[in-house]
Length: 260
Image (cartoon, rainbow, N blue to C red; front, side, top):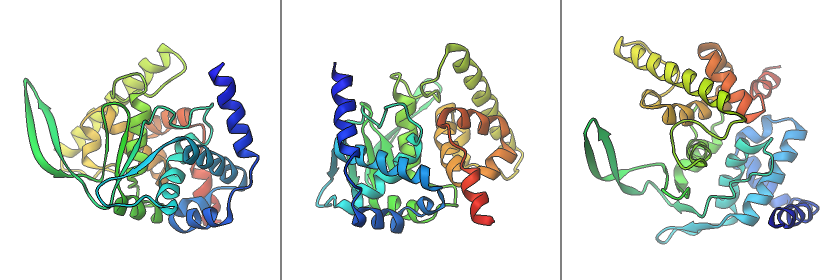
């Protein structure tokens, strides 16, 4: 019953025209939007409309969440759900936005002990109940450079998708248990290979922290999948195929069209 009313409300929402001034903000702040073909642009705008309508944004401290802030975040997050089957971050309770890097307490498990760091400046963070914390200056910089392989919104919302089963362990919702086992096998192997490359002093495509765990590998490779897809497919083909099957879109087409 509740699903019916949600779908009905969303259909009515999407019958409205997307505001021109909203589209201009996205074109200015989310550069990858201009690379996407028209049909996917429309799906992205539909996702943005739903996210803006349903998800609460909250400025922290004296930071004000304007239309520009919410749209810039929503449009980048929408890349992850271009072909979603009805899920538009419904379980994100709130999106907390700081003007610049918030300082938080970080806990790092090290064997049988936990290292606690106080006052660590971060660009983003997934909180325990699925909420997302973001630094606006990082969000804006990420959105305006679509090819550097770094995007804090993609990273943290990928962690959220990973969290949907209650744990952040590098496995987002997949179709079957066999898919999960295959996914985890590939991600474990890829993370181990990255650690080997780093120990050998070799350069790697992904950030060093991608080797920390399958969860971090999923989040960092998601950034690369959308911003450096050709490179990810070349250097990590199995990883790329996993993400391709999950996100159900191929960003290589966007960049190929730009080059042509």
